[in-house]
Amino acid sequence: MYSRWVEIDLDSLRENFHSLQRCLGNATRIMAVVKSDAYGHGMVPAARCLADEGATAFGVAEVGEGVMLRREGIAVDIAVFLGAADDEVADVVKHNLQPVVFDTRQVAEINRVACKAGVRVGVHLKIDTGMGRIGILPREVPLLLSCLREAKNVYPAGVMSHCPLADGDDAGPSVLQNTLFAETVKSFDRMGGEKTALHIANSAALLRFPDMHWDMVRPGLSLYGCHPADHDWARKTVLKPVMSFKTRVLQVKEVPAGFGVSYGHTFVTSRNSLLAVLPVGYNDGYLRSLSNKAEVLVRGRRAPQRGRVCMNATVIDVTDIPGVVPGDEVTLMGRQQGEEITADELAGWMGTISYEVLCLFGNRNKRVYL
Ligand SMILES: *Cc1c(COP(=O)(O)O)cnc(C)c1O
Image (cartoon, rainbow, N blue to C red):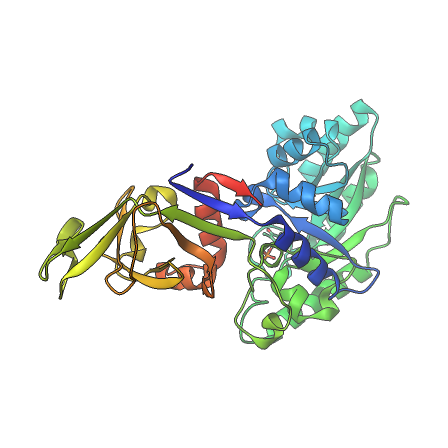
């Protein structure tokens, strides 16, 4: 029995995959984004589950993640968003991964190694249409394309871009990006026989802009059951949270009014109180910024967190919840009876986004698969 654990509900992951698929036309494939250990859900179990449901491509951040997927028997296309450093190209070729490329030198190096191995390697050409991060500017596309044409052992498996504002209030910048993407790829004659997939949409763009689905979409967050924004365009697609975070009550104790709780006594009781200590703290991703803000679920009710969150422990007030005893299951994130604490709610308390909450909880704790 663990002191704290995340539960991963693979049925919800399956359902989310199919809910997203229903948003798409028949010609659009899903590239399931499983980087960072599938946002804390465990890359291999998540990818296996999604491959069984019909995912025909995966997106990872690094070559090592792609290699691990291959070793686990994932046979479909795997795109590597950060591309390949020189010393990773051998693994790209050996394991048939598809790195993102954004300079001519990379293409030449991949071509050299692929040529020696007698294979052809697919790459995803990344165009920066306004992300302001990885990718080449549209005016640099002709140069990279001519380099790709020379590189006989490299073919363009995809041309992609990314939207930094698709979840924002104003749709305008994303629509403009998509227009620029459309113009940039128009000049792009499909080379090499293999079909080149055009893709630009993350979860927000997938849910919000049907015009941006192109040949493939790249959802991450929405697969894991979180909405990329709190707008109707996002909420209209039902998504189920895949991850819950749980612990158990370690100690229950009665204290008088005027009793200081935890480091710094940032909370002092105003009445006779029943406190419960939980064996979870910032080392487990339950960040110190949650201090005196968070709530948890115990016996189906919300209990407020009190005092500073410590490295391995935190305190909740259960004065108003009858019958709490050591060993009671406590839900830090997820559902308990009719109540729910969402990743978005935790993100609000922490001053961050649901993405970071999932990575924090999921990648720092034992995972239990349902
Ligand atoms: C992480 C990532 C995604 C997935 O974004 P979500 O907002 O989680 O859907 C898509 N594309 C790229 C290039 C990414 O890095």
